[in-house]
Length: 140
Length: 362
Image: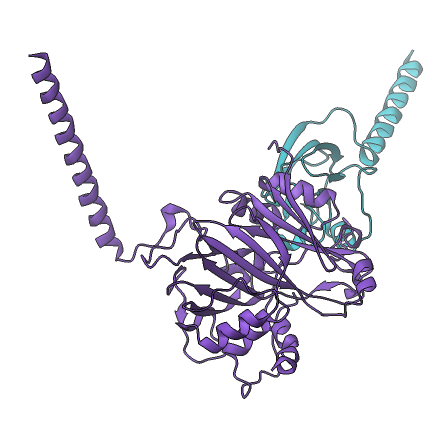
């Protein structure tokens, strides 16, 4: 009996660990909160964002402009890569979406347990980051 | 005289600046450049706004440089619906520059900086001028922005706000695209300007200035030359600063304000496509614009009626932020007295109406 309980507990632990791993690499279907971000005149209406360690956030990004934008969540290295990057379209990775003119696009992203300085949400369409389309993400 | 005028064409190009819209093909969504490898760039324009008999004649020149393998274009806000868009006089703008730059004065280096629910935009007019395909549009900022984007114009991040700034006052825009293939067919040389003449009936002329800052960093210097020909000495808003003789003077500087000389008018009218310019009796104004892009948040309203009241809305100022020509305390007192006067008149009028009503009843 005790052995059976131990096996079940071990399986549960393995499943939990597997779940955590999945959550870290792909966004789960159950976000803890939804953040709606509106883009107007090439500005996010969100100036900064606080998240909890390991939190999964569903982002709903509304583009009211007649020009295309992006919404990319990531650390400093990722933002630098995209600022210099050559990916014209985003959407295959969690937390990285293109938001066409007039469109509303969603993405989910699970943050790690620790955030180094430099985590941001940003748009890297040409000139948009310099125009001010970015904001810091911190743990809160 | 003509060779000298043509020799100054490059000077014209170097003096004036304009707004830049790249081609969509040259703009990657992720960190690309508007003009990859610097191979495509729109140089600049210079402008003449002539106002006579209720018609604004807007003459500007489009110049392109570099290896153009795609399309390139720009959008110009207009104060009204044009009746026609045609090729302008070949050297009218150059002659105007010559008027304000005596041959002995040469500037070796010119620091021109390089350059909701929406309904569809309505196309009002199409025209071809040399290698330029021109479309006049009517629509709100989103509609015009969508129209431009769907046709391959690259809109910089400040475009939505700037287009809205104009659409609030006049939802008329002129989209100009440079057709590289046609330019090659026509043998147009690199940097060669194409003058475009836009005829706009309007009671309220203005010249778009804020559009010159489009796509620029706030600290970038915007340089442009604006020439005005009007029946009388115009009043402008903002009021141009008097020239202090310093070539690096910042702002909108009034370099010339005088009766147009007979020789200037004769020369201008002798340009084959500039016969529309009146025979004489015109007032000549030359405004030199050297302003930081971040400071260029307005347009140039013109009152050529002689009453001296340029429209603050035409200048792009919100009514609430128009600077009154008196101190703030005086202005507040003036408004209080004005309000009290209006209230007294309203009370007296109501009292008289009531009295006359009572008399009729009796």
